Image (cartoon, rainbow, N blue to C red; front, side, top):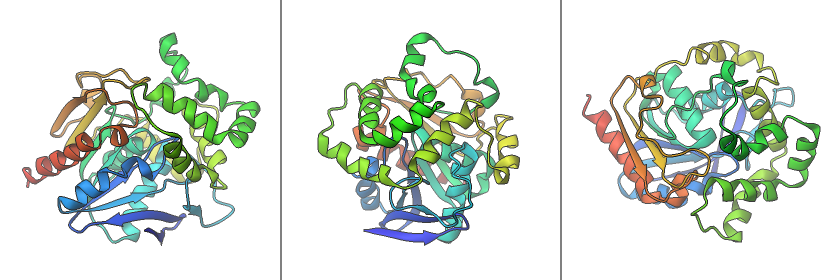
Length: 298
């Protein structure tokens, strides 16, 4: 069942199952809360309260005011997590995510560590270094990020507006070459892309990270802090899928210096970019592991 709660900026739609220590699971782009359709019940059965929100611009989540900038920048996503916790009167939670959701979790953990019990992040440290956005990647990696550049153009706006599901399918296949998903999986997720602010939020996210759009002024201080690549001090488990089409699996050493608290890294065999939906057991295990890691610090 979908519940709703209001923050200062959003009316957030979310699922809430189980009782116990709170865990917030954060989805990526172009995906939705069904990335956690198997993870959430596994964690609820283990005694956790599991909250899975639709990110801004997705599903039934709505902006409360027409004048609010439809920002998709990293500081906004991180602030939304803390705002949701405030609205639900949750003082501290484990945050877990991948892609946009992993970035939101990393931002919240870096800027508000007193609110984060532990962190699970797919692909490690995801806070963007926007000052480095002009540096090219190897061509085979650039090819996988074609939509970053497409979304800088008016043609990209028109394409995303007209072809939300089709663009998602192309990205899913590149991101997860070993994941056998069906049309029903894609149709279910694509319902979240009908949000009236989806296109604006998505385009702003990619334009901002590449230095082609200004951030919303209300997030200027947070973005200045993120520009310093702040350390993540909370207990962390990072995951890499060995079949991620865009992010080759690592031994955890890239970006390791950004994690100054206890940290464990795992490779997940045959999992792609949408790791919680492709390997729900491994993702749930990572949440349990980071909760135990945090408990050991008390």
